[in-house]
Length: 143
Image 1: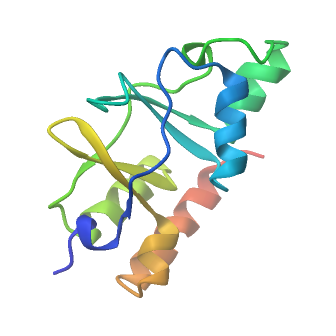
Image 2: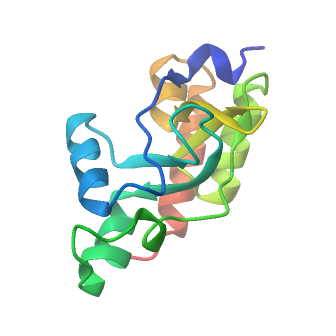
């Protein structure tokens, strides 16, 4: 059975609590992502939160926060993560049950990667589970 480590995206972009929401938006643009993990420092990379593009809009700019606002104001926590040696089946189950599209991968609480529904589907690993997870996520979200 394939593990999360075999399909995850490695070396994801991240920010620290010293960064502001403008810097998060720039990283999202530069790395073409809508998901940025928040770590305690660039060296230890202990995962403490995540910021999605939706977080930036709803908790940041829609609440009239300036670009210099701390990431802590908009980040989501606690964070659901998965160990690198977990199966992709387990990742798909967590993503479906938690309505999560991107799941941080950790080793000893340190961020080492991100696994997304796209990673599961593109690698053709448990494509049915990835599709089912996406379907469940989409059906449960309020628009």
